[in-house]
Length: 423
Image (cartoon, one colour):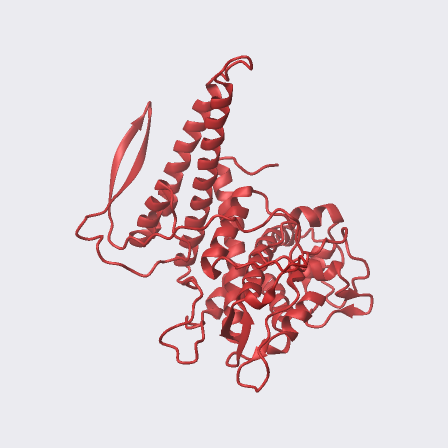
């Protein structure tokens, strides 16, 4: 709650004669130390706009399966098209899925299943190989090769997850926000030239989840929630941090909403969940360690999410909910969890999902420039300021929450076919 208040109070509205200010309070996202932006840059590749797909039957022993191939004609690949997502995939499998996404997105799940089957085959073959004896001279080389292959598998899984998330947005007829940069066609320099798709994004969640999303928006935007036209000048870095935190919130929200909907159908909801006027007097779980205010990387909560942090930080009092937070059935349901369950549900399950969030956020907002002063503090004067309407901020947050919800879905889907999520 405190950090969200700092975020709101630091808006600088451009149509007022006030000095521009960047968003303060980098502890808005209360997180563990696991999730940081990768120091390596992300290479961008042009999307492939003309692809021909063909299918052929392939026999594996006594089984038959359908193999999907994509071919690009040299004459057709010369034209450039707007990328369908900010992050352009690098690996051979990632580029293959990009081709299918561009031309035949409905075939992406079948292509993913084929690639996961091959990954399973490769992993089984590696596990059957005998590791050289410790006394052998090849042990170091053997382990290095195994490490390289493990990193390649991790990158492949990250890009498979990303392609499936993008495909779900395409199925919903929702376009992802492109990389954030001032538009040359916008005289005011605003970055939010994308169309508003708030209704479509809200329609992808259950009514109970939408109530929680409105609370999340109220924490971030405050009394600007209904103001879609005013333009603010805001630190690009801080907006990126809020976007990443909202992805994590959406991941958590889909996870608990699935359990809530199941228990509601089975009529086994805990007592008091339907009482929306009940007071929450005790916050489950331990206090969440906040981010150091000198941290300027795009960080997202691996142990928590914004609203959970507000509960731990005192956003909920015995007298009622904090500013902008309304009691809802799903919120009351979450508050019935014990501390261990709450922490488990608020944690991203796989390193691959964390890595994909890092890369997507950096592709969308760019890599932040970090300058350390001689005193050891971060020089915030290097923060890039962007002009964005409050309606544009709302669109970004809604997209991020939906992105996190889809990430939970596709991570579960992939893990059911190729186990990679740690217990």
